[in-house]
Length: 288
Image (tube, rainbow, N blue to C red; front, side):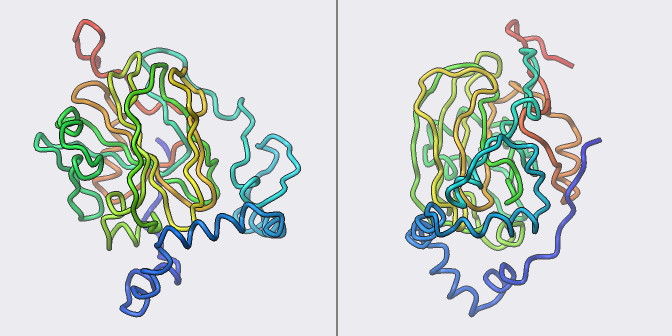
């Protein structure tokens, strides 16, 4: 069994922003994109270097897990590269691997394109901003991976394949902590980058990177073809989220993800970890 993350007591600042009237006024300012852009400029500068040691100590980060580098800014540290041998991908074609470190929740998408997170109903069409594309994922699976500030903040391709349509949707930048998810439809309010991926073994999927409060940028590469385990991009400072949408019957996620989600728990996973398998093989026979 994988480790689970129980509902945590909200941080005082987050609770103030999302659970009080006065905090809501401050939130309007802090969730604006220009505020995060300004914070990003500071975190890109050499003046932010002094924050690195304190952050490492506070979050208990084992720097021996990462490739050595002389970081010239806090963002350079935050987007640090992990030693590849610590995040290997299962190269068996039937293995479904996590694209990133994170706290995972899993949802079945209904046949009218709905799924529910923390008491809020979402539609795939609103998430994608595209009703025609959303129809492909009715009856499928939605996997949400919430990255915390001490996770490895680069994300990778789960399979080989080629790029489809890409789109960036402008929006606000709420935190992705559970307290915010209980108060706002964060995944459809926040800015997000959407990429359709034509994969070799899992059909057409959509990968969505969701920006979060004080995340300076979502940075993606430009390759038109890719291989399993190859880096797709990274988030600059802040916790954030990667969402995967799978078509009906294309994948089978390990059952514990759905069970934990139903019990209000998140499941901790690592980048490259096997989390499921192909749902149907090329002949259309369901795997067990």
